[in-house]
Length: 329
Ligand code: GTR
Image 1 (tube, rainbow, N blue to C red):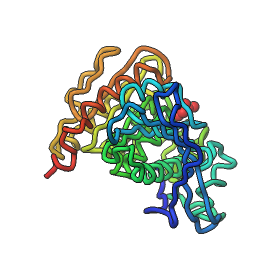
Image 2 (cartoon, rainbow, N blue to C red):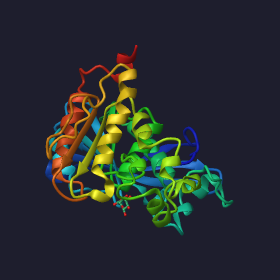
Image 3 (cartoon, helix red, strand yellow):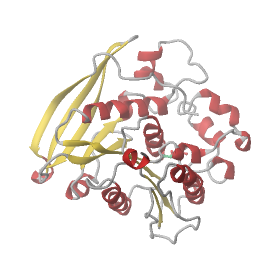
């Protein structure tokens, strides 16, 4: 579905602070613009930017959200995240891979895979963005202001799909947040509700690997469904947010995928979602390791969503909560 990306760290991975502002956001935060660079086999040195905001009120290393941004290095939610004591690292995906069928290869994909035709199971844009998320985490592990054991990856819509794939691949992400990721993300494809595999692959042929196209119009022949993408996050905390007017993303399919992923959490000794009853609007289910809400409104990343995600993460990743790995032993 997502294809294979290069494994492991690239050669000569380096992090350089390009700008630092100790009085960002009216003095609330320190902002660091960081260049992540590395060697590639086909394009020499490659780099992309990440912007980190750390709360100035912090007394020690802080938990950190990695936001996979559509474009740019800012986000209007930054002040409220900082107010809650979290750092925010914003990754701009555009240098890694353009979100464009004609040019998506010209970033990190050709730099590693060369100009030849991509194999049917090779990475495309989602693979490149998720791979870059792990490089951002490589940087955060070197940043003393960040508690590297409490880094969550978060994305909205197509970047919610990316966040799930990034979290599935890289267990250093302590938690994963999918905001209305929909088809190809948290929603079950086999329900045939809202966006289909064919819709995805025809409109966005550069997102998934080519093999996924074999299932255009054949959702029920897939040997897996999207609950297994969620289950790859187990036993780490996972939160899926839906919106009731966002039918294209199939909110119910997102909920049912959380239900269907729960047995994997239970197998690993922790509670999953803990219910198979879809909750009322604006009433999160968040007692287990999987959280879920369906809020009123449209396809968007709202303040309500952010607040619920941080509520959940504060409980799940509090400094005193046992790490999922310890629970397993
Ligand atoms: C839509 C696409 C969805 C979702 C969304 C978004 O056009 O059909 O899969 O990813 O874009 O990213 O906003």
